[in-house]
Picture 1 (cartoon, rainbow, N blue to C red):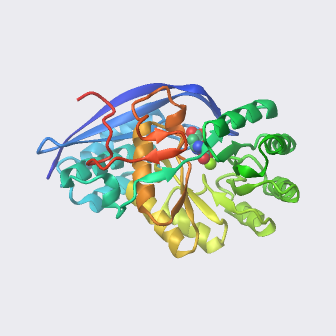
Picture 2: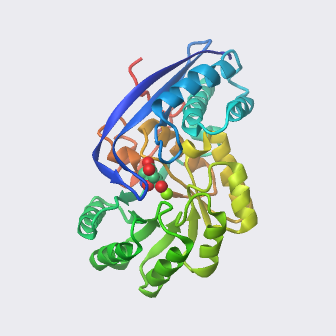
Length: 356
Ligand SMILES: C[C@H](N)C(=O)N[C@@H](CCC(=O)O)C(=O)O
Ligand SMILES: [Mg+2]
């Protein structure tokens, strides 16, 4: 069934509260929604988000690359050749992963609708529910404690704590949260590249001696510093997760060969493709490295696509898909209920971002 049309729409969605990391502060998100149409009239939707400071994708850049390069490369192609179409998109240009992801998701949505199955079945999945975490923005310790308590009251038992702008303060942040929540809550610590390798070893050593209930430390060092990641991993006991260091299957192979991380965080906005995300999960599985599925602060549509992959892939063991819970957008409330994500057994991703 031929792909006969591809269109773009932009969307700005405000956040309920600012999202702050060591890299950036976001008050809203700007997304680009891709709609593709097959010759029988079936439509598929995907979306990509502009995160200039993380992936480098801007709204105008995504629009240009899609209209000038990616749409022409797949128009007229058969949707059933999904792997080949993915390869065409991936090799059309370097980078531009959020733009590529928007198109990849739209193709898979249309393909699953054509086959009349939920997207997770395309990836071999049967179950349809996940346990989500909640992120605590990087703020003063008191405010972070307040946000953490609120999240626990809402039913979250796994919190992802943002740190990385000041090692001494970061220690105060985790101590303050621990003092209020104790051992019952699992803490995921995300430094978003904010420490040097030596700072990371010092502060993680301190976390260990204070026995904080930390599940892992995410991306302690800059994304390019694979040696630093390995250096840290070899000197601490808490597991180290690679996030910004892994965009592609090739990056995952580098992590495996160097033994640079214990875990990998996969995000569609980094991989540019559901198939590439799947490859990373399988490479990591073969190497004995469990994966987490994560997200940018991004639209509910692309997060739902990630959730479909997560329920299907046996090596996606952890979930950090809280972005929809931050958005002033209630279109997906039925899927995201506090810490529960529940996918419906309807064809495709199960979500129409715009009125048809
Ligand atoms: C939203 C999610 N919990 C998260 O923290 N994602 C990122 C950063 C997202 C962004 O900057 O938009 C991460 O680093 O894991
Ligand atoms: Mg991260």
